[in-house]
Length: 358
Image 1 (cartoon, helix red, strand yellow):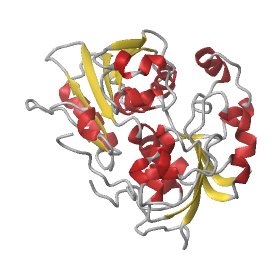
Image 2 (image 1 turned 120 degrees about the vertical axis):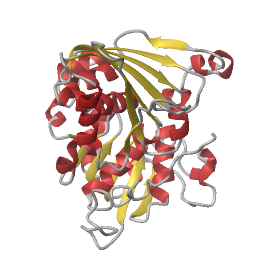
Image 3 (image 1 turned 180 degrees about the vertical axis):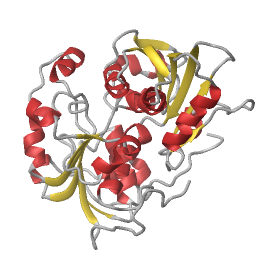
């Protein structure tokens, strides 16, 4: 990885000081991952982490991997001062109600909830089960994927980070859809680890219930299918299965090929879109244990690996993608957007390669 890809060349090409940042909803898994990345980020002054129930408790009591990295304690949202960047690791359906309050607290909002990902409030209501309470704000958010929206992110004051499985699907399928190589409806089969359910998951995520299980929890209409449909312009049918892993997302996507499309055209589309991207790797080899994207080796990293399998003369392609749901599928993607927004090297604070074996 070239750590200076898409950068302006310096630590911070816009400001001569470190950015003052805070995280709302910092007690959960995504919040903890944001803290891990931001506390050690060389371009950041970490100001505050909020939790409604843990005010005054040390951050490292909830996130023990941060022992020795910070002495900060959790505060409440009411105690926040104005900052440069406010990250929102807050619940779906609740975030939209509080967004006017959050907007007044920071120059830039980076939202990791689902409330501002979908452009059409009626589609939001269909997938989330409630009317959108701030539809007038939806159009003010830029999608938080630098690989697709880098130029818009450079000046964005409100950023909405896609869902973890949506990110994997969008990054895998958009290059083929844009190039006109696929057509018709898409099927997406997603597998995800238990951390995707959050730190307050219900009884279905008890060890006794989860261990050894391959459990389909969304046989139809997972909400991330709406995000993939929105990005590709093609109808998507998505299923999601929980697997015995803590981190990780892997997607298998089936798509009909436009007549005449071959392997060379597919590789060319990925190369044209991602050839210079610091965090996208095309993994589609003829042989080897890791010849296709594998979420296990991406644990802790900000990479999304994409690949494909295509039989000669076939009319369908199988597209595979993988990422760490808490990093490229969430917190790492958000930090990457911050780096782009403020003219810092895009990979700053995100250089971790992942582990093998793991």
